[in-house]
Image 1 (tube, one colour):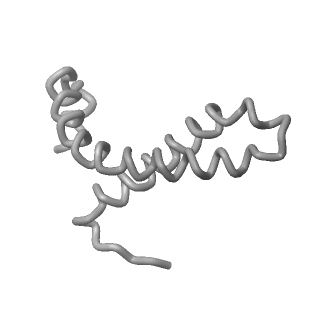
Image 2 (image 1 turned 90 degrees about the horizontal axis):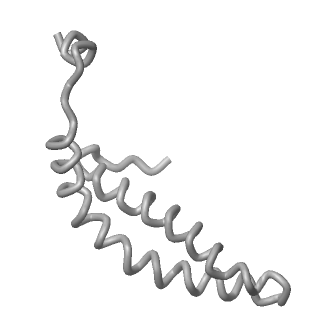
Length: 84
């Protein structure tokens, strides 16, 4: 199995997350081609373009989103007890 150092985990997360999200979105967008025999061709083409576009966006947006979530949420008593 491929072993990537944890310090690169955010890159691995971005690739997997963007790949899964764009695969689903491309399948939905390609649904009109299910009746033809061209669904797979449309889906794979759409997915590859979307994945190439979304991976850098996810890489750049993830830290901002993490900080925003941290600012919008508060730790509960249970969270505080678990840390000690």
